[in-house]
Length: 479
Image (cartoon, rainbow, N blue to C red; front, side):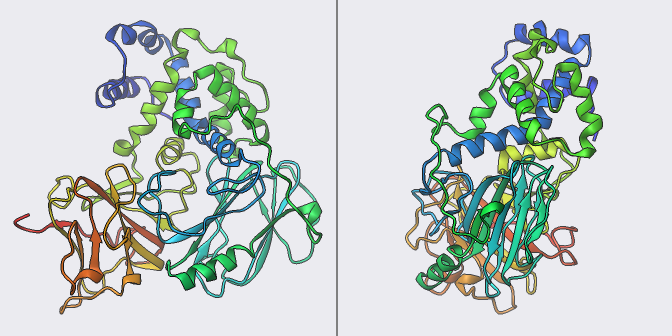
């Protein structure tokens, strides 16, 4: 993809400054930044490079925070060790936004640059699961699971970009394009005590070992803790606070072990003009100091403006979703956008997450109203896995409620209407005992809805090809 600049980006910058309320005075704009716009392409080339590298830098800082512990604890664990979440979070959970109450995570970070790692997966007994493997650029390069490889026991060697060798019998190679690998496994669980126990047993059978230890007794070493790593500030804030020189210096270091894809060659070659060359240290002397301080701010605004300009983002009946996730090719802006708002996104064939902040009337949701989401007969979300509707407050956290229900799905034994349609009641107070199975409790204030669709149909009816769309959420008259 070739970035369009000059007059388009000059106009976009004006939009960014007004819509995103940047802390820039007119004097700032008419000074070094305006000179950069008038003086040539170098400024926009630098923002191109920033956008291009945003996923890799974000992945690295995320890896540092998650793995900066001596032993597995909660949502963190050392490199090469599985982090196993044992229960769904409740309304007090604040570690990450938009948590789910459908799958239990089993995740790990690996460095396969020096040696492959072997992943052994147990027989999942037909249970839905998926174990997407993300490279350093956030592309899902492999995704073993029920949809793709079935549920029988399977073993894979995850090898790095330059590795060549022979693998043991029965071990299939998955070649990672980068040294950084994030395994972001998800296992379906109903949340009952019995099913928790079954999933815990399955989680404990997933194994990770370096290839040199495969078939031998292996005890993972304790993790190394770096006290200089910021463990409190959100990763996105840490990335956004980096100045241009620090950002490109880190990006250059990361590209030595996490090379750009072959398809990126033409775009990356342009970055040599500002001192960024794969395999080499960043040459800060080639970056014009007159506009360097503006690069991160303007580049991030370009990323976030994608929700309006991105052709991959659909807005249907008040539901917004991205149709090109997990594999990005040369769509660098979309890749950076998904990194900023949903790091770790699945391939669209594995999961789609339509999100709604407004009802069919175009007005924001508020708990003082009552709403109904009606699926006509035979038109529940078409999936090969499962679907759910999750309630969040305006900050994308779970909402405390009297029945401790944070999402609703077929697990609740939904009651259909006489005509075969299915109504979901979205409101603060119970709709009554006869309708409570179909009730998704809402907060008193503003809220957001997310429809999770795991393994969406690829053939009609399908949200992927547009032959099926989520219906609009209707406000009940008189509320």
